[in-house]
Image (cartoon, rainbow, N blue to C red; front, side, top):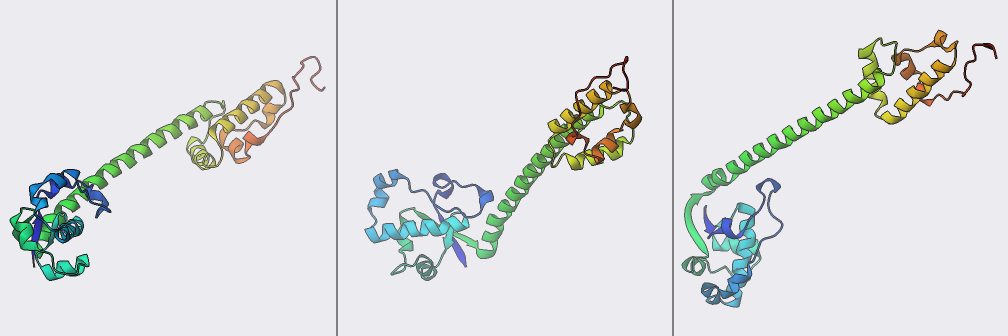
Length: 219
C-alpha cells in the first residue's frame, strides 16, 4: 500500500518525536482566509480535519485508500482525496508501506538513542554529584575522631546509616561525644573509634554536663 502526504505537515504541526503519537493537532486560524479552504464544502472540511488527525499517528502520512480512510475516520462516505490533492492539501507519493516504515521509524529510533544518551549522561552526573556529596559528609564525620581506624568499613557503615539518619544529627552526636570525652577524666578508658561509635548508634546518646574537677576527681 502506498501513502499520501499531508502538504507542509512539518511546518504546521510540531511535536516532540520522543513522546510517541501526539494527543492533539494544530488547526491554525489563518486557514479560514485560505481561498483553497473556501472551495471545500462543509462536509469536505470535516473530512480534511479527520485526515489530519489520522496523519498525526504516521508523521503526516495517511493510507492512499479512500475506503480504509473512511473506516478509520468513521465517515459517512469516502473522503474526496482527489479534490484535496488538486487543491494542494495532500501530496501523492510513491512511498510504500515498507519504505515508509523505514523513512519514519528509523529517525525516531535515532532520536530515542540521542534522548537515552542525554538521560544517561544526566543520570551519571547526578550519581557523581551524589557521591561527591557523600564523600564530603563522611570526611566531615571522619575528621571529628582522633582514633581513625577501619576507614573502609566505617565508610560502608556510614553510607547505610545516612539513608535513614540525617548527617547533621550524626555530627551533633559526635560533638556531644567529644565534649563528654573532654569533661570526664575516665571516659578515655572506653573511648570508641568511629566504627564502634556508629554501630552503637552513638548519635542517640545524651551526656551529663558535669565538668571534671582535678581537685575532686571522684566527685
